[in-house]
Image: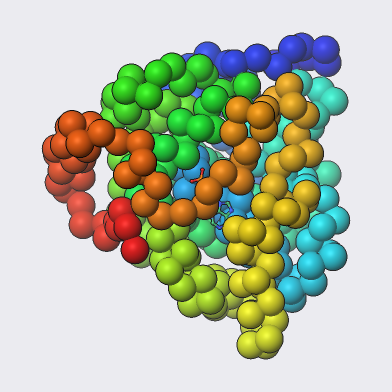
Length: 297
Ligand code: A3P
């Protein structure tokens, strides 16, 4: 698929069962789709920019009983492999990293529910899904697509809004993604969380994750985990802030990975006309569901 020495570049998107994914992922699809997790493995799933990294840090800290040093053993992507990601050697792909780790493993994915490897459902793995309101997700993704030089070129802001509405960005439609997991959450025992709830009351949400994972830590440790996973602390943690990624891949001079971490930043980007257009389309695309998204707290 990708050979040693292949240049990293902005990958085009290829459809996999109707979902646009970056070309190397589409090329490696058979191996990704046949990945067979252990029943003890935990999946953290999101549409890009919904708070994946934040939740990864919370889960790792819960599993290590709040031991900050243990959770600095390696960067996020090594501690919690990104299932479908394919990178040129020597950077290991998600599947390569996973093959070197013994269960129980924590695994990250951005795949929409219908593309999650069957093994996760057959083996009844725990699945934590984090959703973030569409407008903040869109803004965050717009900056990320500029600084991540392997993602498709975002183009200008106004056009980007339309791509988002049409589901033409990497990993496809945000609307289908959040609705897909929502519809399955009871049947498949998915813990469905919201970025906005995590901002509003991080302690409550960390506790929910703890209970879902059948873990138990003291109140002090819970408090410590909340502090260690605040935006400011994570922004300054080199093992959680993605600064270890070479600048030819993530260019922080364009935008840092840990950008703002807020709810409602969209108001600084959408014009009133764009808000109207977006909201009308949103009402149409989300008509069939009642997911309680909040665009401010
Ligand atoms: P912004 O671009 O709005 O700042 P993901 O990890 O899914 O790619 O999501 C990245 C988004 O989550 C970014 O949003 C990032 O700043 C934010 N984020 C990461 N860690 C956070 C934390 N501890 N608290 C709040 N937001 C966080």
